[in-house]
Amino acid sequence: MDDQGFGVVGDTYFMGYHTPLRTSHDFYEALRSVRDITDKLNEEFKDVNGTVIEMFPYRLVQGK
Image (tube, rainbow, N blue to C red; front, side, top):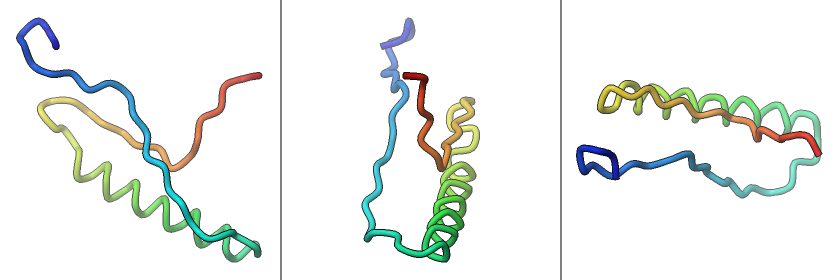
């Protein structure tokens, strides 16, 4: 809860499951699709309650 009593949602992530990608065409199409999906979600969540929410179509990996 924040100092005004509203619930706060922190960082989260979505997981997607799909059939195995076997060809380069499969990979490119999957990447194209996930970019379209995140663009639509970013537009939908734009400026929700004065907060900017941005989703990324990639997994961010920290160093080992």
